[in-house]
Image (tube, rainbow, N blue to C red; front, side, top):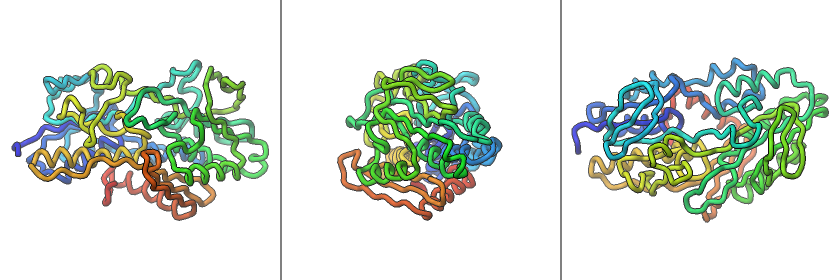
Amino acid sequence: MRRRWRIVVLGARFAGLTVMHWVRRLARAQEVSGVIVDSWPFMTYRPALVYAMTAPPTFVRHWRIDVPAAARRAHFEFLEDRAVAVDPQRQVVHLARHRPIAYDVLFLATGADPGWHAIEGLDVARGGLCEDYLARATAQTLRGWTGGAIVFAVGPLYGRFQDGVPLATADEFMLYEACLLFEGTLPPPVRQKTDIWLVTPAPVIGEALGPKGRQRLADIMRARRIRVVTHAVYRRVDPGGLQLSTGYLPAKAMVWVPPYLGSSLARASRLDDGAGWVPVNRYLQHPEWPRIYAVGDVTTHLPKLAHSAMVQARVAAHHWWAEATGRALPPPYHPEVLCLIDIGRGQGFFALSSTLYGEGRDQVYVGPLAQWAKRCFNRAYVWGRGSLMVMP
């Protein structure tokens, strides 16, 4: 084994923090010199941003992770900067403000770029949940809600994907959670005056789930009187609603998960598949540059879920360590879809499925235990700064 490895992690969200913590667990401090790079000194725990539906705008303060503190705990250096290009031949990352940094192994965990302008008229002013400033604005918009039409919409997914997995969206689960939480908090007189719409380009809701999960989710939406529009083709968005290919849908408020466009960094570095997504092998290595691993939303794997990102990060970190130390290789990445959402009214929704990948697992549970598990995971992740006692 080499005496000291220079590890660079780009991105400090689920995938990046998980890589960093696994490297800390696997290697001694004297064996690794680590750097994690992100544009922000804190990581907003995005799964909790759905509570913009039920909480005042200040709630986001409780869902931030101090990334420099997490890096110190893992014996990593934190650089607050933005990567603008990767030179895989020279094994160097070019940054916007700091000098270029060299790496022995690079973990690319920057995520995908939101495509707010991919649909005519769509921008962050229309409402969303994917970042803390959007969640704050959404919480402010919905305070004192008295009735009217509200639309929860997810944008399409652009690009070609590994193994031909057929999905129209990258991740709808956050939108389902927000929609159901919002419905569950409305007093009956206000609920009677509120029309709730869920709009998706997918042919069904829960398209990444198995038949049991899709059916159970559809039953919940129907019981909650949430109107679902599938096969949506967006023509235009304006302040008063959205124009679909089938007609105009007026809205007093909107909450969006924007389209996913891949990574501009991957494109600029010519590490992508031609559509902005980074191709990887079974161990999350780039097929042309084995010193580069890609994990999380930036890869060609679908769907784009926090659980999937953490599993990919574990596989990639263990593969690097096995090759570095001459150990037996770990099991390769085996994708599954895990959905755990808080649907309000004292209930949670849990689904674990592999049918998207041609396998037979299709488990569903709806009840208070799922809500408790989701809320416990939320708190444990933030308290541990991304390092859990039991990592996925």
